[in-house]
Length: 96
Length: 212
Image 1 (cartoon, rainbow over the protein chains, first blue to last red):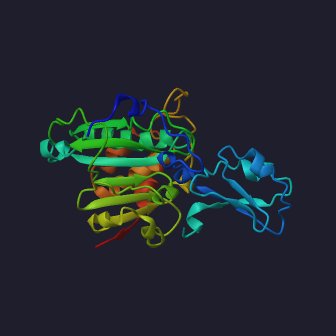
Image 2: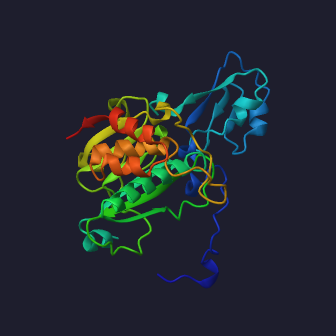
């Protein structure tokens, strides 16, 4: 199958991801999973600001949740949380 | 590529999975210790890191390799172990989300550094199609063993590497692998490793669960 030269993607370029990049899934880097205590959480969005991988999702109904497909488990969210609502739990304590 | 098996039929391949930077040195120690011990027993050996994984970053799954053979190894130009006889996980969470059994040979052995029971870990091992090839699953809690067992933070590239070979948890894991597989003798490992207590305790404390 031949392609017109201009249609060939430039080398070493990953298409810009809109939501998620299937070529760089980083969830298996994590060995401590962030878990938010919804009762403690004040929805201040500090974790949302600091997450280096944009893995914190905010919603009006459900509050803070994490995109575990890409979360590397770096622990920044748990460190910056002003009320200590985010704890880090060993990954193997969860089935999924 | 199946070249390795075709040429070196008697070659035994050990793949050590680990976490980038924080545990990379320990996995390299495990692979190096097994290879050096094999060499002392007159085997032909190779030991190296996975080049594709480098440069590693903290927490990234990376691999170190060892190859042992009673005959001269002719596999020079394959830089990964495509058909491991032994799969070692230097950190327990690697069992989840990594295809650790990819290309494994029949009769493969899995050794995991964990405080958990082998039965609780088996459900995560992937790919599932390769699971019948696993002969035994062994668990060793290397992180708590022996006087002087420690974690080093020497990365794979660049950082200072001033600890001797087998000073940390890698030594205990190597002892466990030697007992489960019988590739090398305990005495030759003890001879080479810096932390001799850890090697012995790794050998003694490994819990083995036979499968299939």
